[in-house]
Length: 579
Image (tube, rainbow, N blue to C red; front, side, top):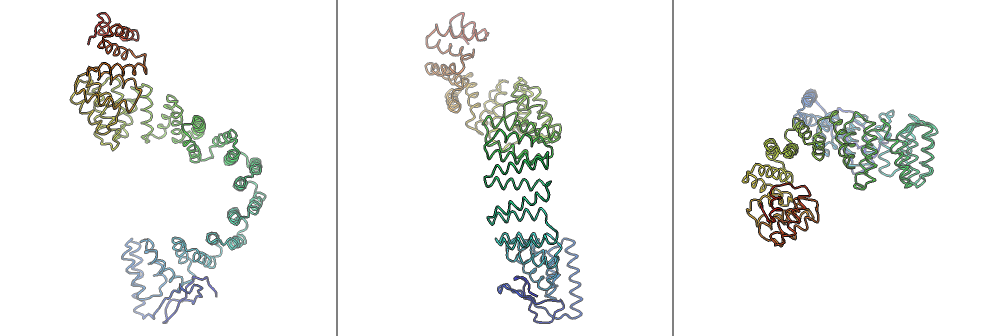
């Protein structure tokens, strides 16, 4: 009987116990020889003992010992196909695929009717993408078990990969003769027709499927996609309209319509179809999340943000028991600057799943942004009860306490944040900056300066630290040259910041560089003319430039803007600088 070209010849040099067949092989370079030898009664007994002992070792997961025993079996009986197969399985698990392949090729030569051997050999050939041999393996599997549809499909796929399209179609013919026409073979045929450059046959194939089973939605979708790919959008629309009539209330049809309208640049109709599709709970949330994520690269375009928000709201309303839906909706509210609205959405998410740290952090950040410091502290502490080692959560709670001037309560959290050893140097810089601010409030200048130094060691360009450190040094009239250098750098990093410009002017003022100080105060007032503090400082500078009249004018402006200090009143009444 003729066999496939890789069924290797068995050359029997001596009589052997195992039954073997001579196989014709069209590949002259891949002949496999299995040399047998006669077994004595004693050899046969020893061989069987070794084989079963090997199986026991294999069952006990002692692969190395099992492999040694199977190899001894093959030394006694070189044509023992079961031993070859078992040893090949061990070699495969050891990722020694070349060794396994040799053993399996010998095994199918000795016993060409064993389905397990051929299946193992197919898996081996798949790894090395040996398509001609793989194709013939499936021929043998079909010969052994012609009632198994998977073998036909696998053989056809191998043929397609070899670009033997007509042969692959013939295999599908054989399969359909066995099991009748079905969607799987029809769809596979369609792919082949397209590879052959025969779209008309692919269209007819799908139209036949629709006619045979008008309730199968995949046929409509694939036909629509086929029309769309060939710029026949009108036909695609008609196909999908037909689908809506025959299979109503199907989210996938609406998604397909959205694709067609997008190709036609009818974006309003496209978005309407997306909204309709998203309202179906049957459409998996993962698909919806993927579609919304497609808008992210278009941010910060306001229209893209608005569309993502609208779709995410539908997801949240449709999948009320999925925290991911609420997280996305909350994120899109934040993107659209609806911060207050986002907070209760995130809370609903946490009610479903409180094990997502990022949601806790987002809530606390939003609360702090809304000056809801008491709630931020409460939620931050709850987050830390679940995630105690989060440096950011400790930092945020510490900052919230600082904003309430509760320095003693703030410091332990900030110290915890610093001690957690975050690898994020930017975060460490911010933590030490906050520690510096708090120590300054306690008038502990030594620890304040040390904290600021650590902040700058982690990020020398932390503009916030550079400004505050410089300002507090200027108030103490210490290290003014260093203060001036830091303040100048903060203004380089964040130009047109009135607070930073005021700090630099004040450092220059302390250095008695009044003309330079005047220039920087003018910049600061230009950027924040309604600040009482800036107007007062400007008056101070003008006083030392002997412009008493304008100095008093700006001191009075500061008072009108809300400053009620006794020192300011003294300046105005005495028309003289005072501290």
